[in-house]
Length: 418
Image (tube, rainbow, N blue to C red; front, side):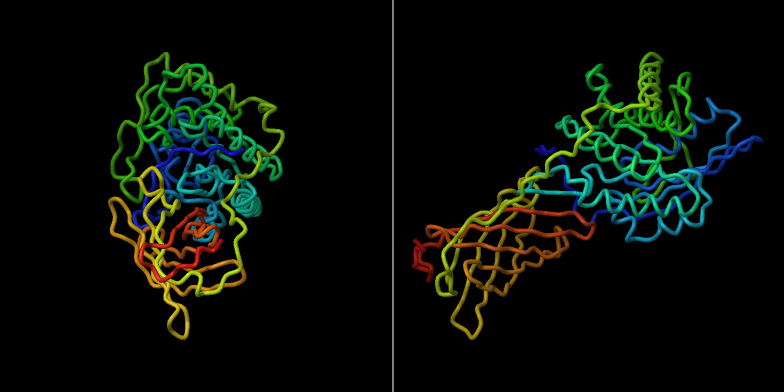
């Protein structure tokens, strides 16, 4: 069963904009040119992974000139890159040798009752990974599947990532760069070696260094032994790399660098992955409605108070107080919803309730937090409304939750529903 993972929610209004960038190639004469395009998100731009790869090539393959480009956006999925079209246009116009495809760390954003879960690969990753791989191949390049790592609090989730990237790479005849497998090995062998930053999922300097080792071995089919332990890159400034200056991205003790080089080389050059990736993981279980009693609008008229588990639990937003008021005195039923958040203004909106058979349903616009519309349904069970909620945000993230409410004291609704 899929395990929940810890996360930090970023409001959609704060998502960074996409920028396309290309580094300047080394100025010395070279006998071979390799062009690599990176498509991904913060897992790629933290510590400037493209620049680290450039540093490895300068040190270990002096006869090669490496040029890199990138289309990166905070929190992006392959789906959002595909629909944005910028990445596709660059693929077709750039004469790239390799296009590195990095999916969102949970394979496409899935939240259940306020807790982030690893998404089923079939839902978002496989469809858009295939579309990108076909575009890349049509442009004469090779797709590279940059396998990410599980979050710090949920190491078993690596099995899902390993299965997903290995299968898609095999199906699309792409290059597999099993970075997550290398992270998993280091975490087991050297748990004191910190690969993450404080949030427990983005890479720290050592984590990006290890990723660059694996990527180098995967692309150039040679070990990364002897790479420099200190590398510079371009700082990320809100929406893009700052190409006007460089900074030290990583500076490791020599013995630590040698260890990461050894692991990255062995994993990147390995012919086989662990047997545990042979079968797909089970799909996550989503909230469901129970059986209720037949409804008409008179049974649900009045004010209902309860809780909603839908928004991020890590921000204290699951569960949160929930209130639904239904008025059936007019020609058509009318309603109003109020949701209280601990450190945000309440969400209040008018809704148009509908009753069909056992089910009460309505839509709730959320223009501030998720920037989408929630769909809520409920049934009446032993005097209580028991419901489910669902939504899809603008980046393709899927949200599922549950809610329940009792008739408020003094409410018009007096039918117990027993």
